[in-house]
Image (tube, rainbow, N blue to C red; front, top):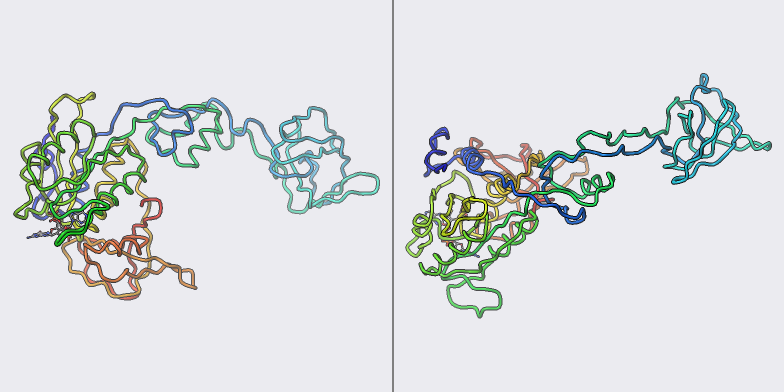
Length: 431
Ligand SMILES: Nc1nc2c(c(=O)[nH]1)N[C@H]1C(S)=C(S)[C@@H](COP(=O)(O)OP(=O)(O)OC[C@H]3O[C@@H](n4cnc5c(N)ncnc54)[C@H](O)[C@@H]3O)O[C@H]1N2
Ligand code: MOO
């Protein structure tokens, strides 16, 4: 069984007390194994799931050559140097009602969008480019019209026998529609990832609890719930756990028995009452990092031992996030989310980061990656601009609410000045 130590030995410049964000990504990529169990679900339930196998198209989409316009279908070979054509309409072809018949060179067929192209015809002129003469013939303004115009070819979207969607694809709304266009009623997806989460700390209150001196309401459990729901995993909410060893231990056992991964928040920086670190160490193979990033410096990563043997022999992955609410969200988005997607078997690449012109000074020293809460807007010129949400305290969740992305300032970067271009990891589609 792989150990954290053996993974660490393969990471260049591995230093638990000063982890480069790139080293964290490299470490997690080595640590994570995708789930292989799969299930067949009705098509409609596949949204947000990950395809377990390549989907081979059993049909052509579209299944036949068809018209892209309401107009008249005719022989493209009749088009000569843009001269107008005069053709006699002999029939009408409607979508869903194929018309079969012979069409001569001086004839045409009135055709609707989606209707099967009559045999031998390859070109459609839109109705607005035609006029009807008194004798019923159709005059076609042919300039700029090429043979094959406004015809959609059989199989041009998906070819029968080809891979319509590959294993590891996330079923997005578009992918769901595409699967439906193949006529499928069910699809094989990886089983839903089970992710347990809980908050720790004696100062943490639950919703509706009476306020008390020195206590704060639990927000991490709710931000994490939202982030996990957006990922489409099965969430297991294990509540808020006080800094009492027995309770923490029982909660970890529960998580390890029921989940593929467990996410905790708080107690990883090593304060006096942080029993959680000692507990994590005792219950599994866990590394405690100080990551060269802001926010999100302390973080625990590893595996929890299972008391009983899990059905698939997998170990429960542990992500111990820092307690500060912004730090918990940022470490989730930047580090945990890609790892969970990999566990889900999702091969989709991370969305590209936007480039935007920064409109303010961002103070930074080289030596750590920073994720500042940003608001991206479009200037009148069309260029993307970004400013921060103001104070960047890692306890200020309002800074996340007002942001629409994270400005990513790489490890070696120094301060940013107005007019400099920065990269932004947009929230849209993520949180
Ligand atoms: N001596 C050091 N102190 C701290 C360090 C350090 O490196 N050396 N790191 C700081 C950083 S950065 C962070 S982030 C925090 C993380 O500490 P913990 O993960 O141990 O978290 P706690 O101490 O339990 O809590 C920190 C902070 O967050 C609040 N919190 C915790 N859980 C929740 C929750 N579920 N909902 C809302 N707020 C929560 C908690 O009340 C504290 O204010 O450590 C720094 N200290
Ligand atoms: O992880 Mo801490 O939030 O950098 O303050």
